[in-house]
Length: 370
Image (cartoon, rainbow, N blue to C red):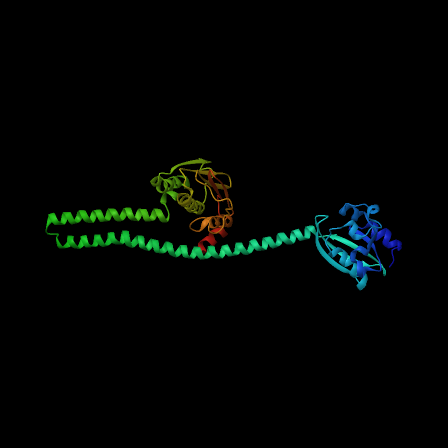
C-alpha cells in the first residue's frame, strides 16, 4: 500500500470519523528519534479533535507540533516502521483532554499512518464500574456486619427480657408465694392474715404494672388499638419528657382514609424509637417534632430535631449511630418498597421514613422467616 492509493486517500483517509495522521520517517530515526517524524497530512477528524489545521502541521516534525506530548504516540510511529507491523498504545492526552487509543501501521519503508480512537467514555465507564464494584464490596461487608449485629441484637433482647422477667415479675411472684404461705399458716389469726393479704395484693398490683410495662416495651397495645400517631406521642412522652426535651406531633392525612398495615406501623414505630434514642444520645436537642403523613399509597414519619447535626462526611452506613444504625433502617425500608432520607446541618437533623401502606405477601412471609 502506498500513499497515492486513491481508495485509501479518498475513502479511508478522508471519510473516516476517527483522526488519522500520515507521517514520513527520515533515515536517521535511530539518532534523532521523534524529531525525524515529519507530518505529511491529517484528515478533518484529526483537525477537529486536536484543534489544528493541516496547513499548520504539514512539513513540521512531530515534536515541533507537540513539544510536550506523551512519548508513547511518537514511539509507536517509530516502532511500526522499524518492526514493519502495526503497533498500539493508549494513554491520557494532555492536549485533547481525552483518553485515546492509537494504532500506528507502516505504509512503506519510510511512511506511516496513525489512527486515533477516543476511549474516554469507555475509560469513564470502566472507572464507574470499578467504583460500583468497590461500593458493592463495601455494601456486602456492611450487610454481613448487619446480619451479625442482628443476631447479637436478638440474643441481647432475649437476655433483657429474661432479666426483666426475673428481676420484676419473678421476684413479685416469689413474694406473692411467700405471702400466700404465711396466709395459710396464719389463717386462724385474723389480724396477721389481713396484713399478709394486704402485702399479697400489693405484690399482685406491682406484678400487673410490671407486666404492662414489659408488654409496652415489646409491642405497645396502643399502636394496634388506635394507630401509630398516638403510639408515637406515648413514646415521645416516655423517652423525651423525662430528659427535658420538648416534643410535638402533627399529622396530615386521616387514618380512616389511608389505613396502613399493622406490620408497617410496627416497623415505623420501632425505627422511630431507634431514631429518638439516637437524638437523646447524640443530638443535644432541645426540641423534637414528629410528623406523620398519610397518602394514597405511602405513609411517612418525619423526625426533626434542633440538635448539633451530623458530621459533614456522614454516610448512612456502619458506625454512624448506636444500635443497628441508619444503614439497618434504610435497608429494612428498601426491602419493603420504602426509603429513608436524611438532611442534616449545624441547626439540626431531619430524618424521613417512607413506607408503603400495604405490604406485599412476599414481604410478610420473608419477615416471618427472619
